[in-house]
Image (cartoon, rainbow, N blue to C red; front, side, top):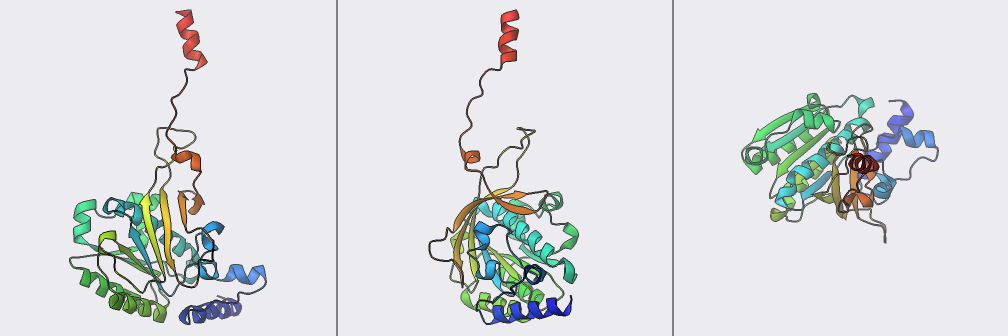
Length: 275
């Protein structure tokens, strides 16, 4: 990074540590030089402090129902893809993913081709499978003490205020962001700076192949955002992931409606008349 980029990055880090808004640079060149972990979607970014997720912080993603855990995992993969893109200049491109053996038995392990389809190359993942949640929290804290990592994510059920505060403080100290992927039924208060509730949504079929699977789509609710959420701003969206550009988009409302029966085409009618 150039001296100016280093200066701006340190200003952002100090603001994050002090949990206060940052007076951003005035020129567009200086603003775009700042490494920012954001959605790339104005409707969502504008409700976040400084228009982005805090790097040096713990963020929480919860599944709306137990069956929505795979959808919540996919949402985390999309966020991590955006994170790695923002850190490309720094060379930090390794994510520590701490899973639980129980979740792997129920939903299966992380699937390499699926990760790559969402933009996250499996080569950038360091996956640790553990038996107990205490081990997951310990592994996350150890990973957060390694500044060379791009980020740390852990799958847990119960994680109280004390444990999550330790994770948040470790993230603040190292500058490595942390994601906590949780089940709804075990929710308790945490020290996470943002909390997102995720459920799966019906995908729209591709324009040129109606029978093919559509892009990933989620119903996203922002339940908590310290230092953000302007009054009156929406906090729930249906987001779609573009597999080519690795960006979020607002899903078209019509795609969630029931499919209408197709009318007979003129070719079929003409064939019947000719017969």
